[in-house]
Length: 152
Image (tube, rainbow, N blue to C red; front, side, top):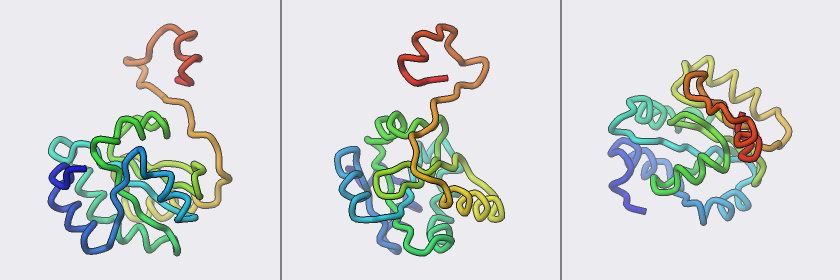
């Protein structure tokens, strides 16, 4: 991982709060060591203003759930992790219990929304990530291809 791949703000937040950078290869070890976690997948911070917005509130979000460990996906691992957890927007917060998927919050939210969504996600049972959902105009038309890829 190249540290310069993260925004200066995210690098600062990670250093101050001890957040761990994870790759596709190291994520499972992190998850085994942390019974409850959130993985921040920032996306391109130079293109997406919300990326730094979420990075800035990440330490406060961690306080909403005692014991919540924070991982930050390495930029080079983002697409593979996006495929694994099937989210369609950056930045993303992916919540996990052990290696099990609980849910994701995509984009920036208001403080009240974060509190409500995180509380609801943490009450869920572990499940498979939901299928991809394409915007109507972008959705492929061949359903047999979509079904084989678990994309709907």
